Amino acid sequence: MATVEVTFTPLPAHVRTARLVATAVARRSGVDEALLDEVRLAVGEACSRAVEAHRRHCPAEPVKIEMTDQGERFVVVVSDQAPTPGASTGASAGANGHGLGQGAATLVQDADDAGIPAGFGLAVISGLADDVHVSSTSSGVSVRMSWPSATPTTT
Amino acid sequence: MDLKLGHYNKDGIEIVDVEGEIDVYTAPRLRELLIDLVNKNNYQLVVNMEKVEFLDSTGLGVLVGGLKRVRAHDGSLDLVCTQERILKIFRITGLTKVFGIHNTVDEAIEAKKLDK
Image 1 (spheres, rainbow over the protein chains, first blue to last red):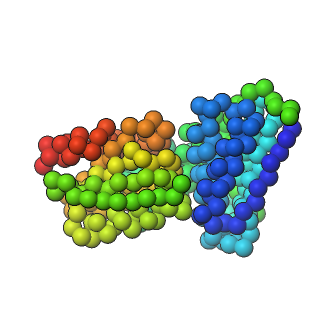
Image 2: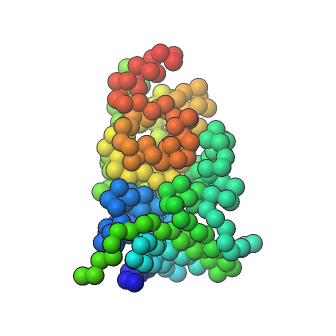
C-alpha cells in the first residue's frame, strides 16, 4: 500500500497543483484513463471546499491530501482543520440539502455574487466518484473518495 | 494552464471567449468580466467554452451568477460547448436545463435572434 501525502497553504492558486498531483498519482496507481477527469474534478472540488473553509477559519493551517493505492482501489482523503458547528460523522455527500438534490432552477435562485450555495461542491463530488464519504467533526471535515484501480504497480 | 479571456460584439450580442481552466483561483476574473459587461448594458451574452480545459463548481457559480444578472434585464446567457468532459458537469448538476448550450457561436447567435 503506497501513499502520497501533500499539504499546502490554503490558497486558491494551489488547488490546481493539488489536482495535477492527484491525477498523476491516480494514473500511476492504475486508475483507468477514462476516470482521470473525474478524479481531477472531484479532488479539485474537495480541495476548493477545504481552502474556502480554511480561509474563513484558520488561514495559517495547511490543507492535507492523502492518496493511497490500496491495490484494487485508489483512495483520496482531503482533510481540513476548520471547526464545523453541529458536526456529525458519517454524512454522505449530496445528502446535505444542497446541490444535486435540488432543482436547477432553485439552484439559480439561490445563487448570489459568491456563486452557487455552499455544499454544492460536495454534491458534485458525489456525482463523480462512486464511493464518497464525508466525516465531519468539531476539528474539521474529511472527504474520502475512491475509484477502482488496475493491477497494482510494483516498480 | 491559466485563464485567458476575450470578448467581442457580433450582431448586437457580446461573445465571451474563455480559454484554459476555470476554478476557484481563476473564476473571479471571469466573474469580473461578466459583471463589467452587464454594467456596460450588454444583456445578451454568449460564453464560448470550446477552449476551456477544466471547469469546477466555482466556475459554474460564476456562470449562474452571470445568468441571473442578465435575466434581471430580460437578457440571456448562452454557452457554446461540445466537449464531453465539460458538458458532464452541467449534466450532473442539472444545469443543462438552465443554460442554452450550442455547438457553435453562430448557432448560439441564431438561436438568440429567434428568441428576440
